[in-house]
Image (cartoon, rainbow, N blue to C red):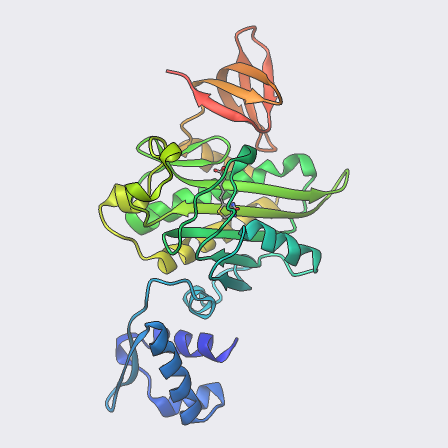
Length: 327
Ligand code: BTN
């Protein structure tokens, strides 16, 4: 743990009671002057840290910025895998690209890369993903799951369940999932998941799970072409949300859902998914690989693929594509 993470963790744990500078210095094994210098640096970033003779250092508020040390301190070691390593970029092309590079460099699974802005954020099916600066959570996670390549959709399903759980926990709002990767609020897309994989014939080398969550965009921040279909938490809740707090809640839920997948308990994740899904039981039209499949969405199979009963009574197994929910 680096010194800023350690300071933020210690003063967060101390809460209202605060923590004396001398205690903090002793715990960290550094001088009081070194603690003071780091606190000044954090204040410069916008952390309101009060220092009083009675209760020592006390964290009054944190700024709305993604700062790796802060996110690590908020997580406070609560996850088994996801978020053990967090990196934040002010701007990048796509966080999926950064994670892909880290994967090839042999970085351990669970690493997370956030960007405050992406210049070439991408969505599924070659679409672009608008990622304006400090308005959302644009991040990717490196996973090395013990799964067959055919089962990679389990991870998209797990991520969707985790996003839904995080929105429920933070704001009490009920989102719905449109298979495979859309999280909707009142029928509009608030988050999307882009799962990219590197695999051999029978085993996954790594998966890059890219998540875009529209947190604080105003309606006018969306490019014209998305305005009818997309929304943000700010638009839906009528107030700005605390992005670092939300980020950490999402990572915790993602870690829990991923642990179930790794333990061979995808059925539990799928059950939760089914409870939130707006696709099951609906008539759907899916454009997949140049053809259209129309029918009734019946269930998820054990790999996370969608089972669609066509009008001829055949059960089609769909692993991707563009889904339209019919009236
Ligand atoms: C979709 O709904 O089509 C998926 C959108 C995924 C967007 C995220 S933002 C972080 C990560 N980096 C990208 O370039 N894309 C994903």
